[in-house]
Amino acid sequence: MEVSEDDLRENIANMSDEELLVRWRSNAFSETAHKIAVYEIKNRKLDTSDAAVDDILKDEQRASEATKMRAKKSISKMLIILFAFIVSTIGAVIAGLLLGK
Image (tube, rainbow, N blue to C red; front, top):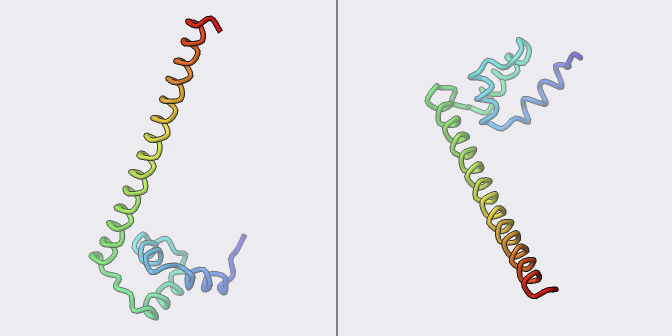
């Protein structure tokens, strides 16, 4: 499926500065998209230096690590709740057996 130049222009225009710069750095554009990206970068007056893009990548990495840490904490909390439920259920079963119910 071929993408029209207008679609490319719209897609690139809708990219965040960060996404545009990261894709720029990784040479992730076709020849046509590259020309459009050059225009968009100049239009937005973005800093394409390695240092600027490295800062963006570091920020994305920190955000990703923070998200993973929150997920781990949520999983830990759910496991504690599950463990408490299992222990209380086993306790209830044992109590029932001991009391003959």
